[in-house]
Image (cartoon, rainbow, N blue to C red):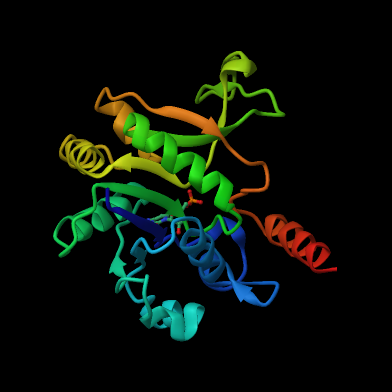
Length: 234
Ligand code: C5P
């Protein structure tokens, strides 16, 4: 068994406001990307970590990680695509040609700096059992599907729904094959990797997510995360 980690950090983060992509912003003294890399390095000790970054973001990447950018377990970053799905595919293709082709891979959003070692272990253990595992948390809100006319189409039963997080774990070859198939069939807008596997008709197991493993998306997410980190320090 040989694990590798892909951290997708090629988004523009336009919903988060502020200057520049959200993964390069500071959060209580360290960048979001540095925190995400640290979380994954701690959770899957020793596995190589590949960051996928935007074209032209090399300097921002180097500045966000400091001297660690050059150190193990980080691999040299590769450029992403125009969608998250495209960025993951680039990362997978790069790992496929690496000297040490992995047998299993975790795919993580740079925008989730709070993945705990326990969560990462849960995902890795289930992935080894089933070939594909993702963390999901129950929803507080009711979710409705809405039509283009602004009218409600339907209301899926809340007990059947989960809010899906990363890292998501997969057998490497099946994720790469599913991504190449999705890309060849013109799909580019799938918002997580499990959806790519589902599109190929493969099963995906859900493990318990963690409500603290939030994705930083809007400006309020940053202020809430700062407040939580400063409380944790006291
Ligand atoms: O936009 P969203 O919050 O869903 O992005 C999730 C993750 O995917 C972020 O870490 C973002 O940097 C990454 N991403 C990417 N390439 C894109 C779009 C998003 O790597 N083209």
